Length: 533
Image 1 (tube, rainbow, N blue to C red):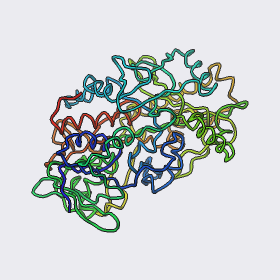
Image 2: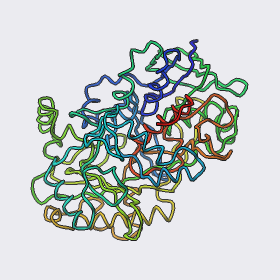
Image 3: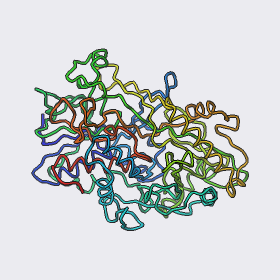
C-alpha cells in the first residue's frame, strides 16, 4: 500500500498532461498508472506504423462493440504509455469556436472558446508560426506536409472549383475549407502525448509511473475516493490518494471503472452484481461517436500509395526511404488532406469533415487496422461532425477485466441521417469534378448502386469505421443529472474527478486528440486552483 497526493488512472492524452502539470510542485506526490507497457516499440515513432500496433492486443485494447443492435465490430484504443496518441492517425484539430462556446452555454463556465483558444496557443508549436489563432514554441510539436502526391493536389484543385477555400492552416477559422492535414508529427516522427508531456519530466522524483498495472476499482470510504485497487504482476494491492483520484482512462474505460466501483445506473450495477454506492443513470449513457463513411475509387492509371505500401516489397522500399530520410509515405498522418464542409449550402458553418488520401483500403477484417489494396485507388472518409445519435456503455459483470457492452447506435436521429446523406452526395460531386474526375475509372465502395437515402445510410453502417472519438459517457453539466460538474468533479463522491473525452457532452467538430489535450490542461488549472492559460 503506497500513498500519494494524486493518483491518475490512464497515461493517454489527458493523463500525461495532468501528470506533467500536477508534478510541477516538487512537494506534490503524483502516481500515474497505465494498464499497458512503455511506448518503446520503434513503430510508435513511425507515423504510418500505427496499423500493426492497433492489431496487437498487447498495445491496443480491442473492445467488442456494436454499430447498431446485431451489427458487431471492434473498437481499438491505445494500451501503452501515450494511450491512443501512440497509435492514432495523428490528425490535429481543435474543434470549432462555436462548439466550445456551446459547451459553455450548456452551463459549463470557463469552457468557452476564449478560454480554450488561449490554452491551445500555449500548447502548440505550429510550424506556421504564432498568430492570434495559433501558438508556437509549445510542447505539442505539429507539422503539415504539402505536395505529398499529385492526386492530393488534384483533389484540392477540384474542391476549389466547388468553392472550397484552400488554406495552409485548416484550424485557423471555421469556414468551408480544404488543405493538407495538420498533424502531431515533427521531423517525420510521431509526437504522442508521452513525447510532449511525460518523457520530458520523467526524472522528477515526485512523479511515479506504474506500467502494466490494471486498476480494478476506485476505493471509496465515507463518500470520498481515497485511492484505487490495482492488479500488477499477478498481485493485488492498493494505492492511496490524499488529495484526489483522477480518472483519465478514456470514454470507454472511465465509465466502466466508475460502474464496477458502484457509481452508475443502479439497475445496471445490480444486474452485474455490483453494490450501488451512487445511483447515477448517466454513467455510460450519452455515448456519441463519429462514423466515417467510406467512398473509394479505382484509378484509371498508376498513382497513389497502394503499389508502394500494399505489398511487402513496396513496404520494404518505403521503410528504407523512411529510415534514410524520415520522409515518404511512412512519415505522413493517416490521411493527407482534410476538409471541413457544409452538408447544405445555406448553413452558417461546416457540419461535416472529410479525410482524403491517395490510397484505398482492402476489405476490412474485424479487429484489424487499415490494410491497402494492391491496385491503384483513392479514399475519402466523410463524417457528420456533430452527431446527436446516442449510444451507451454498460458493464455486464463485476469483474473489471470483462469488457463492457458498447452499442453506438449510429444514425438513429433524423439530423444524423440527413447530414450523412447530403454529405455523401457532396463527396461524390467532388470526385466527379475535374481534374480529379479524369483520374478515376470507377467507384468501388460502396459502389454506384447505393443511390437512395436509405442505401447511403446502410452503406455507412456496413462499410464505415469506428471514428475513435467517443465522448459523453461521463458528461459534464450544471445539474445533478450530469455525471461531473463543470470542474469535472464526480457528483456524489468527493475527491474524484474524470478528465478525458468522456466528460464532453457533445462532440466538438473534428478530431479529439487536440481537444482532449487542451481539456486536460484546463482540468489541471482547476485542480490547482489557477487561472486558466
